[in-house]
Length: 145
Picture (cartoon, rainbow, N blue to C red):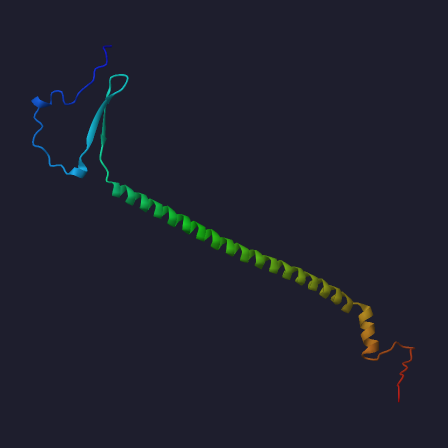
């Protein structure tokens, strides 16, 4: 291959009719640079000048967006943590209440088994209703002052 030759896009520009000059505003001017790579390929690079203010505005808008999203996330996290704590407290109270109800249920079953027994029936017949078995004698002691 021959030695690397630099290409100039404006080499024959004076003989070429580009047509009428377009109106260009200062902010919309683009610049083009031409570069050659190792294999003699032409690459065009264009760059538009940006105003310093528009970059600051974009940065500020991006920062505010990120700040709002993070703030909302932290707010959601804190409200969820408070809700979780309230639910854990309610769970502990309900578990305690369940244990109390289980103990009361056990006590009621024990009492029910006593009330169903012959021992309870005999005790009620003798003490409350003053009943006696046949061949027994009821003795009543009264105290007088």
